[in-house]
Image 1 (cartoon, rainbow, N blue to C red):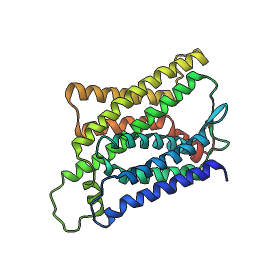
Image 2: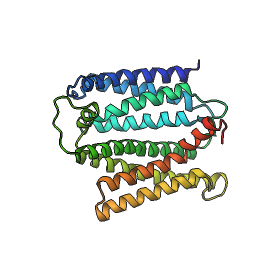
Image 3: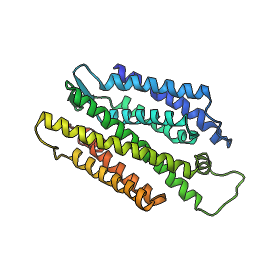
Image 4: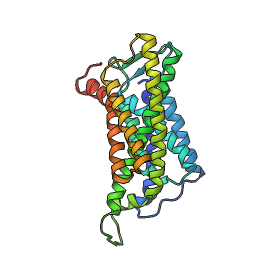
Length: 283
């Protein structure tokens, strides 16, 4: 058993234990306690362990090895780092109810589907390419976390618009949604993530053009990754323009956010999953 499988399995276990600690009061119909120093240290330790697993699996001496599960792993890792930093500023502990189980599942998938002969191997001799690769991953992670938050906000918005039903024992889904931060606070955080993600995505496209010109002399390769990335960039640019000019918010903004993320996911992870798992061959 390779080291990256063991490390991702340990990271999945760490996230699982943290998930159980935060889900326990919800199941017992209690209020989630604020994230204290002990839990914050535990989350940080899990992130360090996950980071070691990601580095061991992906980064090699002269190349970068990536498949769909590792792509998801590094995405949720960077996204969890963003959450950990943001949680020091705003009280958003309720988001951990979904982020921790998602991180558990993705680490488990990375352990079950490690890199193999069909993985994408990218030579990393050039410094420019390494910069482009890191910027692209950071942009993808920010937008992925924004999409997860958009899902939560959509569910919370639908819940808040239902007729008030006072119950002594509310359902589990109701307790989960009631534990989330207020919608207005989430919306501010959402657009902060989208603005930063859009900026890094734009920088990723610029550095991608530089890498392509340096390697092939071509402005941009017109493959599926480029097309879906550009479409995603267009969707987020329209969303942010609509937000600035017409004050777009609420369900309209959430739909555009999820559409932009879906296109960005198709740019890499979705197609890698189809070829690696469904068709069982590399691209």
